[in-house]
Amino acid sequence: MHVWKFGGTSVGKPERMHSIRQLITSDDIRKVVVLSALSGTTNALLAIGESLKANNDADANQQIDTLKAHYDGFIQDLYKTSTGLQAGKQIIDNEFSFIRSLTRIKPFTLKQEKELVAEGELLSTQMFQAYLNEEGISSTLLPALEFMRIDADNEPELDYTEQRLAEILSQHEDKQILVTQGFICRNPRGEVDNLKRGGSDYTASLIGGAIRAEEIQIWTDIDGMHNNDPRIVKKTFPIRELTFDEAAELAYFGAKILHPSTITPAKMKGVPVRLKNTMDPEAPGTLIADRTSNQVFKAVAAKDGITALYIHSTRMLNAYGFLRRIFEIFEKYKTPVDLIATSEVSVSVTIDNTANVQPLMDELRTFCDLEEPDYEQTIVCIVGNFSADNPGIASQVLKALEGIPIRMISYGGTEHNISLLMHSRYKADALNALNDGLFNLNE
Image 1: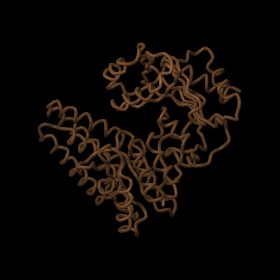
Image 2: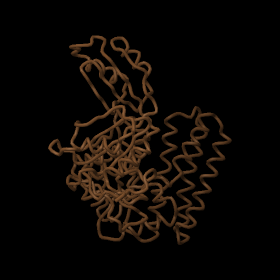
Image 3: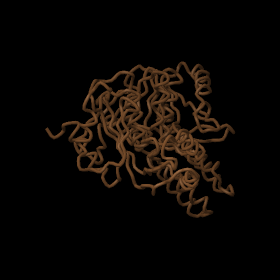
Image 4: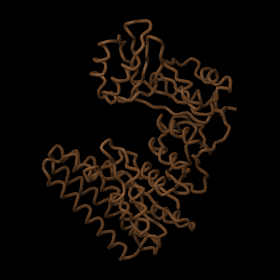
């Protein structure tokens, strides 16, 4: 069995849903098909929620009318028969009736907001399933709220998902296509919740791991993960193979095609992940698995919104326990660290979450000296095969970046990552310089 996930742009138009139907029925492989909300829907639902939180019911109802009109028009081109169109209308009427019911709940809380946002996936999957029924495809709908659950720390309950999916799938052994929602889940209180933005990739990986799928395919509008950011660098190319660890590094440090959490469940269960392009289905895409090519430099990614903190021990020498005390404070304030550079008496770290940075710094000052933080920083991450026995890796990277000020370097933590910190104003220059210097694209 395969798990195939399609994002918002892949289902954003009726003709694209038609194309997805052709893709998923082009072979005899049984599939779980994970869908995101139609493109633009999640943002529209969040805007409705903002209006309701501001007690601006008039704006909220107008926004609901606009969104419903979009869906009413959408189904006119999605379905070909009066029976199909009637099924689509019933779905839209039911879900928008629920959306309107949320406008009458005062105050409008986070609980209602999560129920509201979940409507995007509930709409897209039901509409698509009705379309498959119209086409006579052997299929059924698997409600994600029946098997996807997070714990008190907002982490997926893998054992629960595995057990529930086994029970549910056993009831539908005669179905070839099983459609379900990405992103949405329940929390420990049984309320509707979600896996955060981009969580449909995560859903697909969690399902793929739970059912020990033969392969997980993530379908987007680009032909695999590229070696650099194509929005900034002109001459990029798709990477054919990556290891799980390489892909995880690239996703975390800014490769937008893949949600950072996606790799973990697939890696745990040894399920390959393939990134494919709905606009060019014949393109090979990128395969993420245990194996990889021997290419030294694989790809470059960049992560913005970074803040650098510079921490110095007041004891100067033999400051044992210094690092422990520092990271206990980061743990206390739930602030993850991206990069770290150390000497015996100084530590430089980067963070991307500054929500608690002021109380964190105040507590550090009780036993440390702090320099003024550097804001508006970017981490540029170079991923590849950087074995300790492979000489000249760092020199090639630094030579490519000659003339660009670098504030921090992290190298040696793994055999596949070199990360550098710089001011965000140098990001574009750095990505282009690395493309020219490491991938020989100007030859």
